[in-house]
Length: 602
Ligand code: ATP
Ligand code: MG
Image (tube, rainbow, N blue to C red; front, side, top):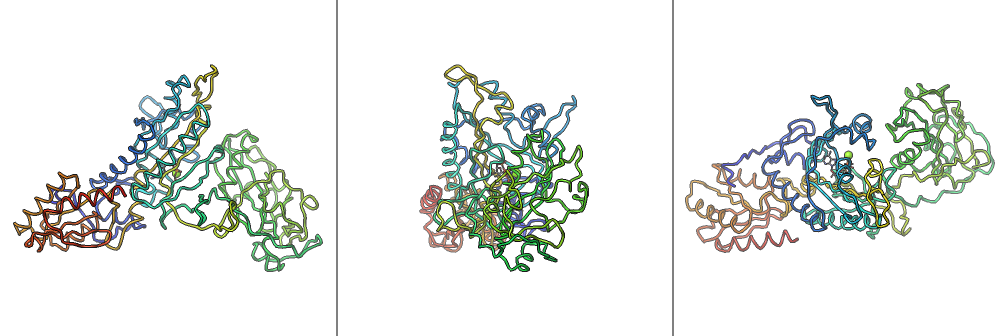
């Protein structure tokens, strides 16, 4: 491709609305244009990158025996009503764009395709003989994200590879899951990315496990905890660890103490001269279930620990059926104003005890009249602890479970693991922290969708069983931008060769020089014929401008048909290292072909 014939516009300055380097660079280098909030045009250079990544993804998927297909983006609401997700997706979470057609039929734009694929499976899979099966697609997804940001990182329209597998049993699912683990690792490695596979939260249903593939970068929205020995890595939402040991309580007798102005753990520890590990902290949460019922939740946890709200929400989702609900609509730490909407009397906030009475709640049709009480394991083990006295300005010391306070029936792990904590698998290892961009997620779904939608098969014994499912997603457009976030310098993008839009660019410093043009044209044609994808910068611009642009767009190899041609040579510069060398014109094609081959084999 000749730059003189190309839609090629680069910007000198950083666009105002871009925050992170990769977003700025993709805009400046003319890869993408913002069309609306979270909506981008992928311009020709970007489209080549996306196609290269798609091809790597496709090759790795096909190698596992999965088959490519294309599913509709326009999805009938009925399917989502069958699975029970329509209201949550269009109203509660609001992530799904929905519309009504001219026949007054409700439709949604696909944020994901479990419902569609499960319908296909329900209609077409009859027997265990057809299993296992794995279908995937590479397609645009629509999600009305609350905070679209960082360009392609969190778009409202983005490209995803999503795959769905169907199995007769868990064992077969686990095998495919392992194959996907390998395939995903291969995809990211081949795309030239530094990444980490981490244990991920599977929500309340997925006891069976999921893995996220995190591209390591400071701009990542996720926190990853891992150990140096490489044996443990998890998303902080899911991570477990050993809490530090609690110190022995200085209080041996139970008594109430006046503790003015101690509504935080730190102030209380200072005032009573005790360790936060000797305090039972009581934290109030509020959850609204999908039937509209508000439930107040009191969590007891050791004072030095924090609640992992993802783990807590999973526990509360498990309780949904007790309240005749299916799932959670919203979850929060209630503000004073919200508390006022259900409190029968003023709560001793900051001084709440584990036995705070249910009559603080003015129960109603919309508000459950009792607290749901959960205790984290760290609080269970404490002796002679300090906690609130249910009276502003007062605490109790020397308290024990099942003496002064009844231990809640629900003992759970809802503690947040933190960097520096000792690891469970080996207590000499401490957790380290890193930021990551979630590029892929593989998930053992089990029978959630097949059961809800009646997708069954007949097993060898002639019994009808729900299909066991797995799902596997990789964000193609997010992955592309992650590569830039991981690899750039002050002058621009440095693409990994395997996903660069072009491998090489031939720059003609002076287009008035016919000899330069002749050599450049020849190399441009020969390189392309030899499979080295090459651009030709034949624009009527100063050499400096051309070099700057080549750096900005990040093409791995630059060939300059400058002064050296009088000696039968050209200058070749590697973008990543800036290493420059003169190569005989006759040897350029072979040398570059070899370099590109080696870099891609990586
Ligand atoms: P996130 O937690 O970042 O919102 P998710 O858990 O919603 O991601 P999945 O539903 O598992 O993501 O989708 C599979 C993949 O699609 C993700 O791993 C990510 O790479 C990509 N992806 C998800 N949402 C977006 C988005 N809004 N923009 C770009 N890529 C996305
Ligand atoms: Mg999401």
